[in-house]
Length: 110
Picture 1 (cartoon, rainbow, N blue to C red):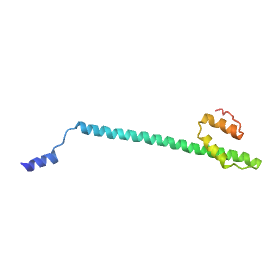
Picture 2: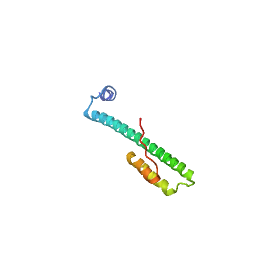
Picture 3: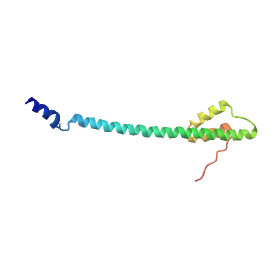
Picture 4: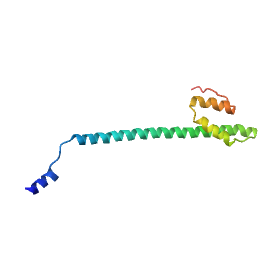
C-alpha cells in the first residue's frame, strides 16, 4: 500500500495549476519585460554617448583646423570646455560653440 502511494505521488500525480505557480509565472514574465526595458534604455544611452563623442571629435577637429590656419593650438582648458559644451542640449550647443570659438551658426535646410 505504501509503495502504491509513493508510486502515485511521485510519478502519476500531476498537481493542478495553483495560484502560487501562476504568480511565479507572472513574476517571471514581469522580470523579462523589465529586462527588455533596461536593455532598450541601455542601448539608447550608448547611442547618446557615441553621438556625444562624435560631436566632441568633430568640434575639436573644426577648431584645430581653424587654429592651424592661424598657427595656434588648442589648449587643454579649451578641450575641457568643449566637452562641457557637448554635454549641453543640442539647441544650446551650437550657440555656445559659436560664442566661445567664433563660429558662425548656419541653419541647414532639408
